[in-house]
Length: 345
Image 1 (cartoon, rainbow, N blue to C red):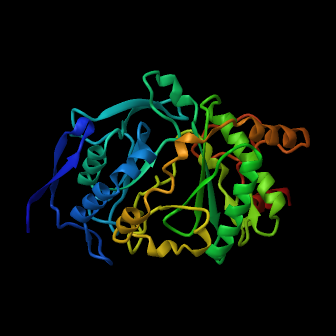
Image 2 (image 1 turned 60 degrees about the horizontal axis):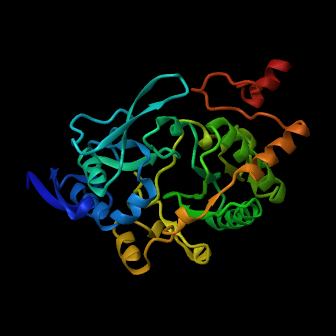
Image 3 (image 1 turned 180 degrees about the horizontal axis):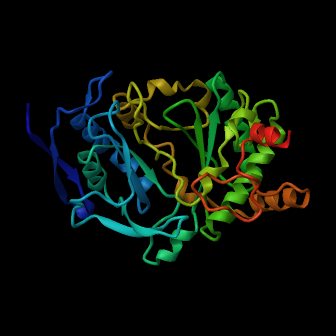
C-alpha cells in the first residue's frame, strides 16, 4: 500500500500548495470503496464552489478516523498540525466558553481537513472578518426541512417551493440544496445586523408562517412525539453553535451522498441519492455552481422579524432550545408533552 500521495492544489495568487495525503488507500465509505485520496480529489475538483460556500466561515470538522462505520467526533478546536498559512478565529459558545475554530480561506485548507479524516464541513452562518464582533451577527439564514419517517422527498420539495415563495415575499432570495440525506436546506443571505437570538426568532416567524400555509405537511413541533409524519422546520439550527453540513460536503452515509446545491427549476426531478462523491464533480463540470450568484442577493431581515413580532402579539412566544443550552427567557418547560400530562395526572 502507498504510504502517501501529494496533490498539487491551487492557492491564492496563482501559487500551488503541495498537500500530502497519508494512507491514500484508506477506505472511508466501505460500501462504495471510496478512499481518502478519492475524497481529496473530490474536494479539489469542486474546490471553487466549496470555497464560495464556506470561505471566511469558522468550521467544525466532522471526522471519522477509521471510516464512516467507526468512531466519529466533531473537532471545534482545530486538530494539531494546522498549516501555518491556515487561519483560525475565536468563537464564543452558548456556555460562554471561547476557543479557536478553523477558517477555510482556500481549497488547500479543505484538503488538509480531508488529511485529518474529515468527511463533512460544518460552517457557522457568520463571516470571520478582522473585527471578531461580527461573529455575533449571522449573515446567512439556513432553514432545515427535515421530513419525519414515512414522508416522501417529493413532499419536501413542495414545502421548499412554498418556502421560496414565502421568503420572496419577505424580500429574501432563496437558494436550495439537498441535505445529503432525506431533506432539503433553504438558504438566504442577509445583512449581518442582528444577533443570533433575533435571527432565530425571525426563523421561527418564517417557520410558523410556512406551517400556516401548509398545515397538513409542515410542523414546528420541537418534540418528536408531536410531529407525526410531517416535515419539521428545525428552527433551532439558527442558534449560535448550531451548524448544517456545508454545500458540497459529503455525508457519512452509505453511497457517499453530497449535500448538493440545485436550481429551483430542476428540484422536482432531483434524486438526492444520485448526487455522490463520484457523480457530483461531473455535474459541477457540466453545469457549474447553482449558487454562484448567491452573494449578490443580500436581503433585509426586517420583514421576517415582523412575523415574529406579530405572532408574539398573538401570544405565540418562545419555543424550546436544545437541551445543552442554558435556560432562556420565556422558554417553555423542557419536558416532553406526554411526560407533562403524566405529571399533571
